[in-house]
Length: 142
Image (cartoon, rainbow, N blue to C red; front, side, top):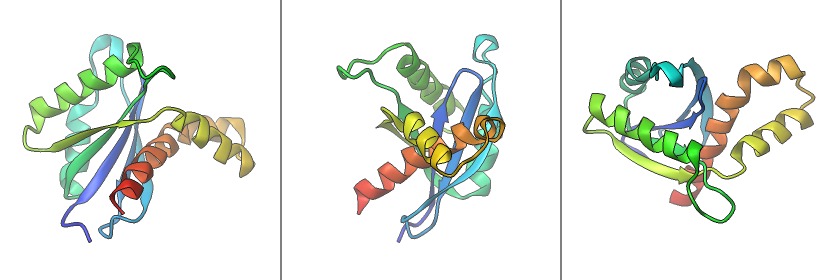
């Protein structure tokens, strides 16, 4: 059993999918999708900090998109920058960078199998990707 919940993030250029664990550390649930504007450096960190405090989380798992050859590309660099910005606001939070290769594809496949319409998929895909990222991390703790 965890002493605090864990937050999972799928960071994109326009949205950040947010998921949260249960206190048992067994399951991840989609929580929110934050609208951001990466180009304007509006990253939603303040709103995320509110969520972290409300959920009583002490760890944030951020998806780190890697290339198939294990190198870190542009999106990976953006996720690392997001981590830095989060630590400026919440310096005591534990941040784990988690290899998220194919998490968005897995989330998309899951939604397709559930016959979710394209417009609904677009609204929840980032939150679902955050669930996949966090669930992968939680499974690694077992």
